[in-house]
Length: 416
Image 1 (tube, one colour):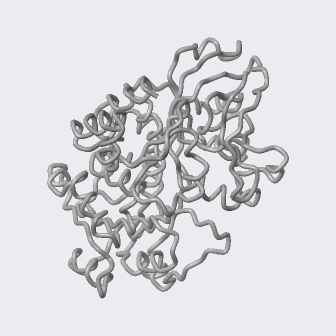
Image 2 (image 1 turned 60 degrees about the horizontal axis):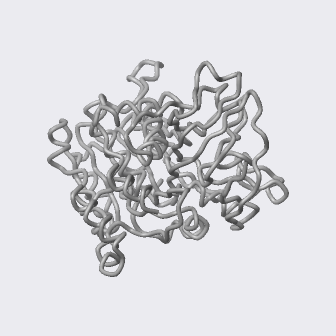
């Protein structure tokens, strides 16, 4: 069976290729990918090539299929898994397999499975680790967004606090405490805000920072101060391009500092600002994975010793985090549509991935079975003046408050 896929051959060497998949084995599953969301982690894999922790050293000889935020339909099931899965089932995948301690993951490490492909072979280890997850949502794009949501869910679960005089770690954020998301105005920050506002363990104060006022203003439209207040949270959007961001951020806490600090940008000054904002027993989560293996920043170890401040890092979520993401979507508690800013076809993946940091907006959603230039939703109106396809898409999106939707997806899949 042939597939068309974007494969990584080396440093910034991405190629859209058509090739033959091997015959499916009895412990494998054959599937069709419908949607994939481009992730900054894929850009990092492209930038580092074989030097990336999850990318094989021999990627030049055995290229891997890129993409790990995908949703699709099962087409054929090997006998080993026939009692659990069947053709026609929709699925998502938790890429962090942790199979026998390996870092191997779909979208980074495998030759025949990845999100930026039309057809794939799902290897045995995905099912062995319970990482092939049924998805019965009404839109494939929502399935693609479960992985980014699972990453932020895992982040919040990994944070911890210690009661004074005790040695037991209390996992999770400090309920009712002060939280700041530094550089939280990107797509993962959006997912984190959406989740923490609507989950069952909330801060009392949430401050989200960024340097671009237009992005903060858009966030305030999508995830409003009023919506947060309904859920018991005092939400502030704060522009750190001011003269003294530390002073302004500390003022919002009455000088107490923040119990939970999340850093969404791999810059030393962001880590150091986060450190300076920590309250007693404050937890700093370094969320954004750096490309530089020698990345470091200073940390106040006086406060580590006397104030109990501490640091944690997470890289992806786990299967339970993804299932929580699916459950919250199905209950209408989180809205994956707010993350989508662009759509495109498989033909757009190579250029978009290699230039991802330069492209404004949030998530770039790819429908792998079509050809379509990467296009921002806010460009639909202008393109629609000369193209009836975009005119109709613009009409649909405007009917959904300027957001992507199951209706928009259905139109694309039926008309491209």
